[in-house]
Image (cartoon, rainbow, N blue to C red):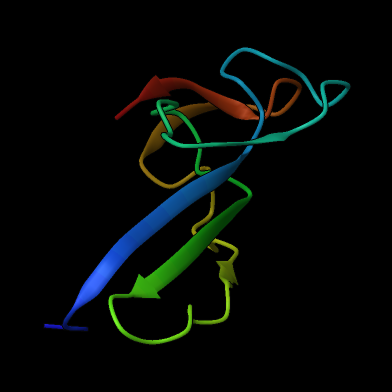
Length: 83
């Protein structure tokens, strides 16, 4: 168990929509559906039941996007074929 008496846990993901290119501005969203790449950032906000909210935690996933990919499309920045 990481924490007890939590009133709210909010997780958001920052990145571009699937099939978009680098010209499209990334946005924050409540869920991440792109199975081809990780979000650029993940934001975690925790509000305990009887204490002040924790400081916002923002992390950047560091897995290489090519991991598990048979054919990487460098122009689009995504996997063309999974292994």
